[in-house]
Length: 395
Ligand code: PLP
Image (cartoon, rainbow, N blue to C red; front, side, top):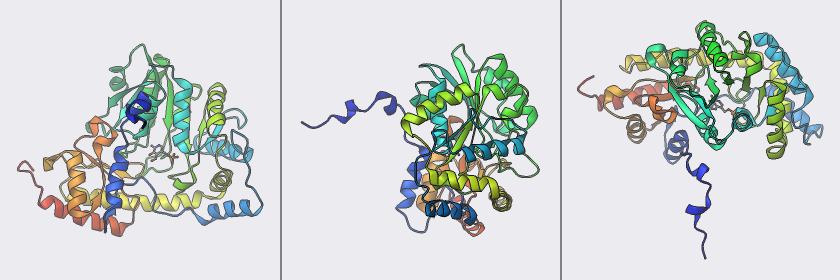
């Protein structure tokens, strides 16, 4: 007798669609001569001093498990870093959990916070994992669309329209993937008042916090008056230090919440890899100058791609953070998916349909500029060629 797999996979898992990002990678991987603006991954290799510290650790025989919460020296560096960056005060013993990327932190945070049916407000467009992790944790994701007229910032009025007695958590990610939007202090203050009025916990994914441009600087949600106790701050090393493959991140928050998350972490992960933790210590001690160089390079590419897409007639919001730009392609008369698929087939340029980041992303596509200027230049030429053949009569 064969297994009837249709009946054997958990309905909760069945309810989660596959990531709209991965689908396009898989098609692109089969093609030759593809320029990918699809991946949300730095094109830089991790700085040598960080790699070397890991190698040195291995030479010293540092190959064991660590404390569940992470190496004490890493937790201390994280606390020091957040004090320096945002003036925040955390206790390295009780308020920090080192995780397998922000991905793990997000997953266990939602599992630690939600009872079945609890609602999570999620401003969209947003990173693809927010809704999926909420569903997998037994919660209900409540998308709140952000509008381009508001530079893709979410307001308290937007959120107010979606709050119910079951709302427990607000999950925000700024600088934003996929739009590149940032929230200034006054915008965040509005959300802080809203969170307090409705007694919500806030998960603030600040993985792109070091990547801001044009005079913007990142304000941590936890640094707002009265917000530290109700905010779980997530951050990591993947983007700022070009360390995606190391799988290392962390969560900072109230001791009670960190203890609950640590309980899940100790049974499921045990600890983050020691090699990655050693590298992360070095990133925080000596990585800043390499990080800042990479950020300056992203800034240059940002200007280049923004001007290029605008010149091609695609309206764009000028991104102020992360390394994505989110042009409006609706003038072609194609949906996001049709645009992405046809561009890939015709011109071998991979990007991600905006609809992968929520319904309000329909009509947009996400281009990552974490790739070389030469490749961006060639991608723009190919997009221009594609647009010549896909000009709707309304353009
Ligand atoms: N949060 C956001 C907004 C992201 O864009 C990503 C990766 O693309 C992650 C979290 C996952 O990061 P990590 O590599 O630390 O798991």
